[in-house]
Image (cartoon, rainbow, N blue to C red; front, side, top):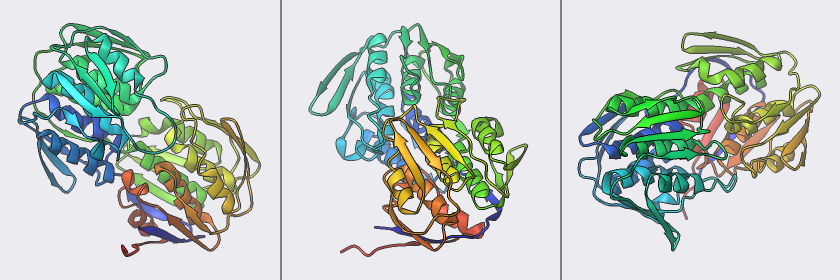
Length: 420
């Protein structure tokens, strides 16, 4: 199992290019099931989760060709309606094939998904939404069974905005008869990116990026060629790295409009941030100021940046309160940060962080994707050597992270442990 070894204390500077968004690429790749013909996707990141969705598409009968950051999917021969546990257990986003399969084949059998252990993240919203569109749903032996001769437009309302729920039901509604209205929809850029792609295919979707989305169903969709939007979470992680190390990093291939919640909070810490075109430059402050953070659905501060920002607050001047409102188990990384000398006290869904003069390198264990990133960041600023174990989590969402940090001046390397 791979480990990442970091010698901390180096100021980071230079330029880094952000990869395509994993969370945008996954639903967009799944949407290829809705078409006959070849869809071409560029700026696709090389990640474990992308490999998992490609494996799943091939299992369903699609022909998939991956060349660097370009992925071509021909779903003309999709005929298998079952997404098996062996594939789905690797990644929660596998549930995104549920609605396209029902829309395309009239039925789907999808294993209940796995993924990071950061909370329950039930798929009830997906299932209730499909039922509202006329599907019959049953559960047996760890699988969801869904069927419908023809989906029909209907009204859907989410009690809590769900990103994957909104994305899944957008794909179902695109080919349903009639009009579908989705209330309290997720507003994340990844949802907008999927809606844009579906519209390029010939769908009729309005309101994406707002809580009210309207979909006028069409009879068929056409293949497209599109580029995946930049990964706003990867961008945010490098922004925090600049502030954390007192560095000066220019971050290219970003959408600054997608980063507003992160930019606002980083600016409050004293970091200097300049956004121009598709570039953001971050200069770290001499003294990091403590600020409070509360995770919220977009356009609020993203839950996927909470762990990284907590590292920054761990070495800030003063006290900060970090409140997690999205996932109930997203403080698993705290115990590992405390091993490195962080002063963090958890009470319910909040963490009180008292800044310390410095962190100390230590062996640590990653528990999920974003926790992995936070431990790498902690290692970059810590005194001495940090060893981050179980970095396969990291490979699910960050493309060549250690290489990118090394280009910015970090002392970081990956060590592969021989298989016994």
